[in-house]
Image (cartoon, rainbow, N blue to C red; front, side, top):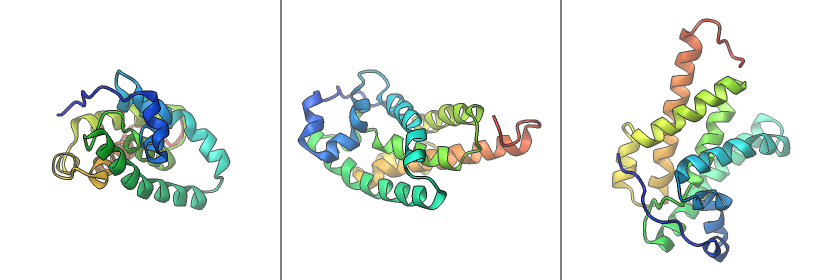
Length: 172
């Protein structure tokens, strides 16, 4: 397990490029402590607003696909500018996959809380193939994909819980 220990860049860095602004999670990635957790919390907080702005599943799914694709570019350019492919300030890779989790997870606050903790767990331990992307692909694609894998593991764990724990159903 590799913990990102690079100091955050100055706030001015965000405004040098729209790629930096988004890759650093609109500033949430500049947290000096647990920037990935800060980015995931930011994602959770803005998710209801995004669902209001993009009602309906198809428009939101298309938005997520575009945000994932854009993330490859933004994370790559920002990593190059910072000199570290997966710098701790880069949190778009947490934000968009967590939006995907919230979109596909069972509804309700209990499920969202479980999703948050599971996503952070899988993002930190990086089970295969997430670890491979993290270690071998030092570019925007690798940065995004290790968190996409963490999101997939999160959704599998949530589905297993929903199917095996009586009384949880799909609400929360």
